[in-house]
Length: 290
Image (cartoon, rainbow, N blue to C red; front, side, top):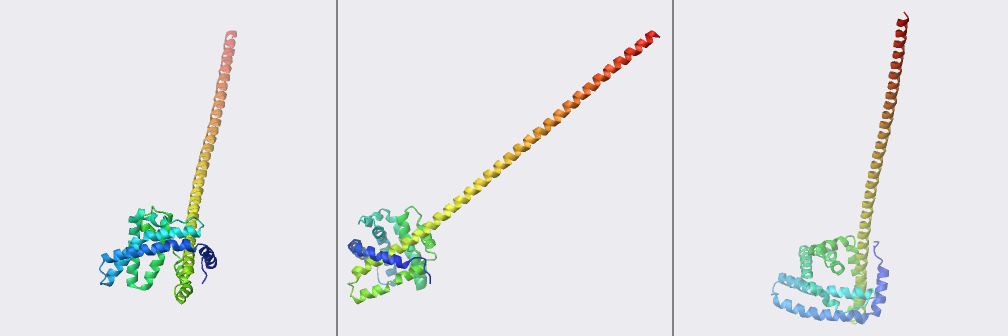
C-alpha cells in the first residue's frame, strides 16, 4: 500500500522533538490525568452504574467535560512540535467556549457510540472520521456545531485507513512499555504524541491547501468569465459604433447625391427658361418685321 504521507519523515522528526521536550510534554499530561480523575469521579457519582447503557452515558459525559482540556492539550503539543513556546494556559483557554465544545463532543460521541453498538467496525470508522474536530476547532471557533463534524469527515476522506494503520504502527512501542513494566512510557508517550500530532497537522495542511487552490481556481475562472464578458461587450459596442458610423456615411452620401441632383435640376430648369425667353423674343421680332 502506498501512503499519502511520509511516515518515516514524520516519525524521525517526532523522535527528535520528543527527545528534547520530554518534561514539557509530560507536564500537561500529568495535569490532564489528575483533572480527568477528578471529573470522572464527579460525573460517575451522578450516574447510576448498574447497567451497561448508563456506563456508556457516563463515558460520553466524561468525554464532553474533558474535551476542552483535550483541545488545550492538543494546542500545547502543536506549540511543541512547531517550535513555539508552550504554556499551561492553553489547557484552560477553551473552557471559555465550553457550551459549543460540549455540544460538539456530545454529538460526535453519540454517533460513535451508536455505531459501535451496531457493529464495532463502523464505530472505529466514525471515530477516525471525527479525529480532526479538535484541530479544526483550534483553527476556527466560529463554525456551527454540525459543520465541525461534516468538515472533519470531508478532510479525513481518503485518510481513514492510513490513519488507522499509522496509529497501529506504534504497537511495537506499546509492547516495549509492557515488557519494561511501564518504564518505557517516559520516552514512548512523548514520541507517540508528537508523531500523531504531526500526522494530523499534515493532513490539515494538505486539505486546507486543496481548498485554497480550489478557491483560487474558482476566482480565476470567474475573473476570466468577467474579462470575456467585458471583451464581448466592448466588441459589441465597437461594432455598434462602426455600424452607426457607416450608416451616417451612407446617409451623408445619399444627401450629397440628392443635393447634386437638385442643383442639376435647378440648372436645367434655368436653361430651359432662358431658351424659352430667347425663342419668344425671336418670334416677336419676326412678327414686327412682318
